[in-house]
Length: 394
Image 1: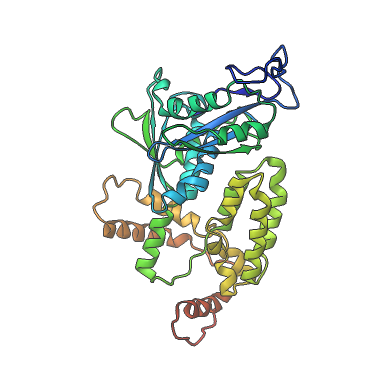
Image 2: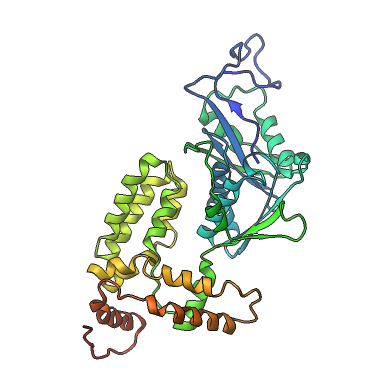
């Protein structure tokens, strides 16, 4: 939830604090917003079980993108180290505000977070008019207000330090950081984008209780690859999707430069050098754009598989993204869309095979297909299989 927005500057803050007699804290008479300092929106994430909290201090609009970025920072900083084996995250939130149940952008951003982390994100909204039932109000926000009572919030640094110093007799621990990112108001999510969400509504008040499931299902995909192809099977992640994951965390003005740096790093033939260049990009983004930095590092090794296999030229450009197989995937999806109940994995395989046979007539040779024997030899070496005699492809 978002705490009350606060003006930054030498303004009166409610409450009483001990001071030397005759030396009160000097504050401004009127609370007009100071343009250079603006106001902040503290967004809190409270872990009920651990009695710990994360607070992102935003300097821009309080939007759904800011709310989900705060959840992302909590997960990366506090949640994942505490729950490394977690597969599902439960979020309880108010029915309105930047995390309101009616907001399309809220669901869209949560879907991106689910895709990045591989977590199923379940959301339970408190019914309208019951926002004060939210435990964050009584266990975190009230403690923050008591901690900074009578202290003017003169700068962003002071605000972050006062929030991080908040504690209670029950052992509350709070971490906080400034979020200087821009979150423009008025962003819309189209019907077409909304249809791509992997949204599962509960039977009881599905408008308030629902879950966003990862569309890529990375843990399940990896498990399936290991089961079918063996534990050492190389996996290549789509670089175009990786670029979108990174740039979604960046302002428009910064995206072209970061894209050029990412592509230059992938163009490095030595996988160790390519990884080092990506790590340098992540370090440069870590301070001001931590979400983008985390997106660069997430699954990085799997975007460099073609480099490790020594793939070059036209075949490299074909294999670095999922573009060559996406039309087939769409045909398979359309072929199986009428199936309402899947009985087993074998049934799913049969329907997938039937869809591929239907798509076979539209197949074309990929660019660089003459280099496929070299790729096959590299793959055999990668998994420890004996070499075979190369066959020329005309």
